[in-house]
Length: 194
Image (cartoon, rainbow, N blue to C red):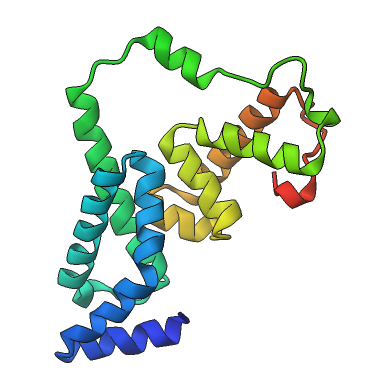
């Protein structure tokens, strides 16, 4: 759905055609669910948070000023709800620091060097490593590389400064490269966009 279509639908909703909001839900529902699921990694919680994101978007639609794309505005609502959910869950859960370190420090087996893999194997390995990132880092990478959001849009969605987004992207790339044993000047294939 193009931005002009979004704006047209938003106007209709604000003028009283509340059923038109369903078009936005239909179009962006799976996108919002994916954002939330990437963060929570819990289907049931994601479904609830997705529904809550659309309820908030509907209630706050008059506050949408068009400074950012509607999709970015919606991403931000979903992001904030998801992070609040994670904060509440963290307060209720005790995690063994050794378990956390082991989970996030896994790397490829020594018998499978990155430079010997074919393109499909590299993509699968990279996908596995991205899935092991902390939820905010994983979402940042996915917004930038898969959703092709700009640094400015990601900054707005995640509530970070643009320089902070750039720094985090750099650190995440560096972390991924080190997990694969790739030298800092080496590049992953451009098709992998890292």
